[in-house]
Each structure stands twice: as structure tokens, then as C-alpha cells.
Image (cartoon, rainbow, N blue to C red; front, side, top):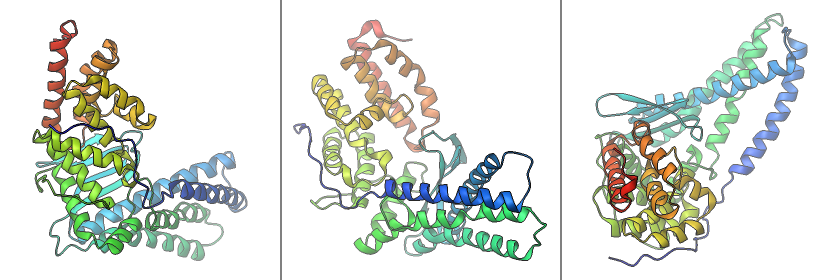
Length: 380
């Protein structure tokens, strides 16, 4: 078996993350908008509640409405463009396209919002531009209609102020999603930039099919050879799916090598929810080899944000690793017991439907290993 080396250095980032800059910019614009609208509503309308409370309600309603319209439009035009649904997160609930029916799971606090993932039915015929621009194409007419409605209705029609304000958030949502800048996850503008700059539409399609394979049997999870020193963000996504493949086909050596590559290139993984995966996989690999002191040392050298995710009590994928850590690193029976009894609940909320049974086997293997060494930790 290949030697496990702890990877400490990280490759420099290819694309700067502008999430904080965009967030601050939108926050400033939002504050100015609230101030402007508060005066606007105060002089244009009359409501029998605090005007600041009322403008806040309008602000929240506008944001929810605009984001909801944008992602529904992306889904609708995705269907027209030749794509099929993988998952659709609508605020508090996520719809997963399973083999036989649509399954719903509650969204976590981290994932609260809207998001749509779809895969092409036919790579050669699917229109990726229409799919990625669908949210803007669908939602912007609502903003235009609100302006027209405001212009034609008399001043006495107070509701026109509310309608205009609520739909005035649509341009901000559209611009935020179409900016060709790196954020904390892929946005449509950045995907279009990568496809054009790196001529990588095929890689993006490949990853969409891999994601679909984790949810239903319309696609098959495959291993793709990815090598080289200059890996793109889409290549790193492929490696993430390769890691799942290796887990499911009991290939620990190759899985460990993938984790080393993911750790070295962590700065260039776009989806921040997957940054921890290489570290978690590395620790898991050390644990199944019973190299617990190395696992502990590596865990302590890992950034706290990744360490917290690895030990999370809400992530099903973290369970197999956290059980080992509870038993062999921290000797925490109470946490072990809490995780043991949470496994079925966590499995019900796992979004990768085709991997539920496979992940269950990995968790059970960890529990069996622990109970052999800790006979007093046996749980019926």
C-alpha cells in the first residue's frame, strides 16, 4: 500500500474569491435601498404600522420573490434547453429526482436558499447557454412589468409602490448570478467564463452526469483519469466524484491519492461545501489502517473550519470518520453514543440517494471495528 504523507502545502489560487467583495457591495446597496424605499413608501403610501418595520417586510419579500423567480426560471428553461432535474432546493426544502419518485428532504441552515442542478439529456443537443441564462430570461420580464404597472396606474393605487419595490430586487439577483467572478459556489456567469476560457463544456457535462449518478440511475458513477500539474476547477470536481467511486468500490489506495491531490489543490475547489472532503478522506484512510496517532496529528494540523465539518453531527458523510475519532482519538463515549443513535436520522436526509446503502456499510464497518476494540462500547 502506498505511503500516506501528510500534505501541508496548498497550491496558489487560480481565481480570486470575490464573495466577500460582492456581499459588502450588495450590503451597501441594500442599506441605501432600504433608506430610499423607507422615504418612498412613507410619502407614497399609508400603512398603520411602523414604516421601518414595513419596509423591512417589503425588503424580505422582495428578496425571497426575486430569488425564487430566478431559480424557477432556471429550472423551466433548463427543461426547454434539454436538461433533466437532479435536485432543486427551494428555501427550506430540497427536491431530489430519485429513480421512482421525487424525494424531499429538509434543507440545512448552511444550504438555506434556492439552487437548481440539472444534467443534459443528450450532450450533443442540450443548450447550456439557454439553461444558464434561463433564470435571467424568466425573471427580468417581471421587473419590466412592475415598472410598466407603476407608470400606468394612478397615484391613488398604493399597491403599485409595493409591487415595484418587491420586483426591483430582480436585477440585483440576476447581476449577482451572472457576474463572471468566483464566489463560494458556481454561479452561472463563472461557469460560462470557465467553459469559454478553458473550452471545458464536456468536463462540466461529465460532472453533472456524475452528480446525477449519486442521485438516480439515469447516469452511472464512473472513474475518470485526471492527471497533470495544472488541474482546472472542473477537474477537481471530477476527482471528488472519483473519490466516491473509490469508496464504493473498496479502492483505499487510490482514494487516498485523490485526497492528497484535493488537499494540495483545495484553494481551487469552487464549491466551498466540498473543501473539507480531502481532509476527511485522508483521516478516514488513516483510521481504517488503524494509524490513529497520525490521524489525530493530521486533524490538529487541519484548519478549524474543516475540522468542525469533519466532526459535524449533522453530516451523514462525516459520521464514519467522527465515530473513529470519538473512539480512538478523543475516547468520548457520550459523543460516540449520540452519533450511533443518529445514523438512521442522518441517512434519511442524505442527498446522494444512490449512495445511502453504500455509506451505511461504511458506517457499520466503522462501528464493528470500534466494538471489537471497545467491547464495553457495544450497543444493541
